[in-house]
Image (tube, rainbow, N blue to C red; front, side, top):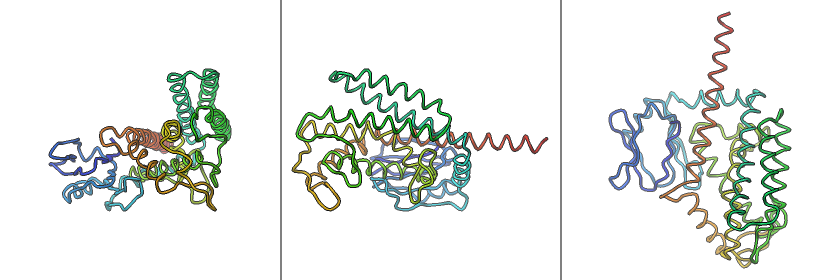
Length: 328
């Protein structure tokens, strides 16, 4: 296990011998040996004892304190820090064109696969003409992503898939609010305002989890070399946009939960009214921070751990190659 992420509000992290355990209302939620943890993230109103902090310090495990939305409040960093070597290996991997392409191919494949899942659910719930052909196009693009020979080719495949999605997305709106095309800076209509705000909330959540895991959110494989852009956060965010934000916006509009009266026009384009943002945030909290089944957080954590494994495997392979050269 790499990242122990505490999302249950009111939970407590404690120490028992050389083990860390989490409890809430006198019920143990999990227990793990501290040496098997690389990082701990505590979101919102959860507690950690000084004894647990001391044990984690002995094992060089950093602890990151986050808000429920993913903003980083602060970190407890032991003098020896397991994450230093992880970040060092991450930088090297993202500078290695072959290794960078391998991870970027996986990320684009996952993004396009999320489109396939989205359209399959639509087809299952209410068949729409032409959906089968759209899914087949996405499947071909996903296969091409795995065999791409450059990041530039990947970006082309990813861009074409996103364009296809937004060309079709508007077909599924059935109520007052409609979607015609994607506009960002500023959003030119209500649906685009919801998409942009939702993407921003998703970004913050992913960014906080990446920081807590020990990865550098600025060092990405697909999104790179742009000042003050969290490239890795953008990379991971792509996987979750359509099935969590696009799907949520579509549901809010089609159920009539969000209407045109929940928006207002200003210098920065269309934005929520106070009532509208309250409705949107409640829906987002139910998705992102559900205490019974925090599916989104668990999925982000799982993807983060896959990236950590890829970074460590790369570091191990470089070390083996270096040792082999030294022995010659």
